[in-house]
Image (cartoon, rainbow, N blue to C red; front, top):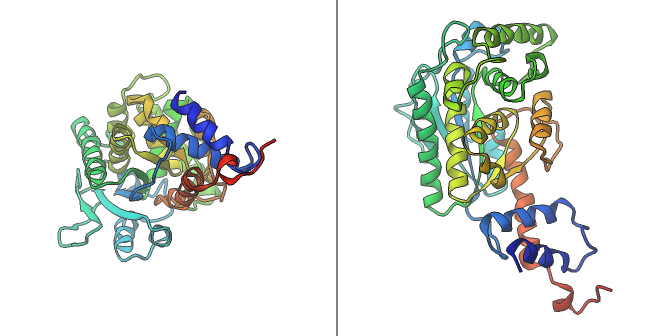
Length: 341
């Protein structure tokens, strides 16, 4: 009997009506398949939040909050004051915060959960005027993301989720989505962390100018080239993180709009990454819903989230743990002496 068939047999013979645990059964099958075992385990679940600044944010054309909020929120993460801190602590999930390229001097910050690894201390360039980053910097960011996840895997973590922080990064995510899904900008842009209707129109108009500048609708770009033109350092690091997580056979919990846009880039490099991905939730961003449809996946939660930080992934981790517990601990009809007729 093949492993998948053996897992299905094990799940179907638990003391319950066939299929009655719904998506938990699907989760148990997926985790067992990823780990290639009938007795999977979730070990040292971890969320990594990548933070970076975006040059476009300085213009105030696409974001309701000033660029300085990126650094302020990183410090808030380190002081355990953010939503992601609450959810990871509540669910016993390890948390790491990575400075991928925040416009702030963190050299004096000493914290066991902080990884200070900026590719550029000023964040990206304003891509209305020039490429967001050098091609070499895009490659270095991907490599650093790989390295960070490799080190986390090496200490026994087999299940990981990624979050982000970066004022203006929903704009990069919308441009990435537009490129890979071949959708117009207005179908990809949402209100992010809270723009009003007038600001939303301005955001769409601005990003349409960017898409036209780089001819995104007609130009063939590889993953690194696309990142160099309109990406962010936190997005590029997340791409490398996805790749390393899949290479290390980790269970990957995918968060919201920006995390899923980053995944599109990772999939352009290695389509097999998707097999390790569990899609934690469907956010309130119209673009996220369309990306999930494009990927033909079903998210676990529908909570109208639009915060980022990896919060959706943190909330979904207990569901994955319960699915694995069901597979390992629930009695079978035979062991419990219950008839399945």
